[in-house]
Length: 182
Image 1 (cartoon, rainbow, N blue to C red):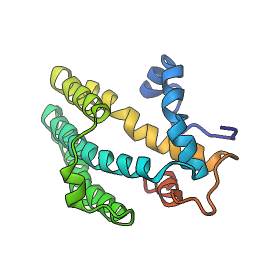
Image 2 (tube, rainbow, N blue to C red):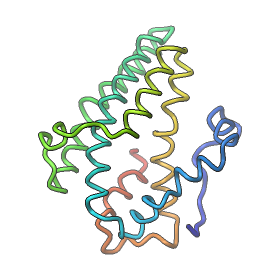
Image 3 (cartoon, rainbow, N blue to C red):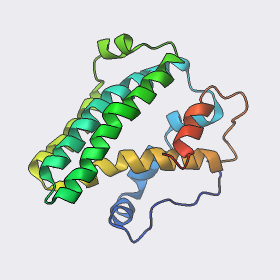
Image 4 (cartoon, rainbow, N blue to C red):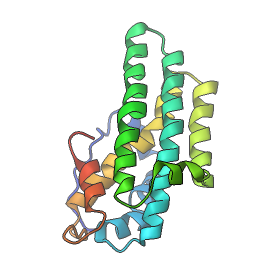
């Protein structure tokens, strides 16, 4: 991807330092062929629908991970912060995701009928295991690649000269995740 991209994570932050220890793995994640095809509008629709289904199933586990963070938090302020995130995932993000899926012909029943793919199970159970075995920082570190990755992917796509927005069926997804609200 040719681009002018401004990193959203400070290099001296904990996540910035951790990411710097695995640059090849991070690049293979944020510059994957799926992402390139999403950006230029050539991703097969079936692949995008599969992703949408898995992302919803992922959100269920993501909410559980944040609920675990509430339990692991050491003070009320932090508990409230994580509780707010659980609420936002369960009552807002999942609803918005289902609305987005409807535009792709996917109902909640269609989505719930599907099983989690191996990649979804592997990542989410790793996150939950880190949270159970470690402390709240371990859990946050395990959660960060998803949160930071989505934002970085969308911002990279918006900055890339290879991205085609006009006529791109995935434009709404790109713009949503590149927005300040995300």
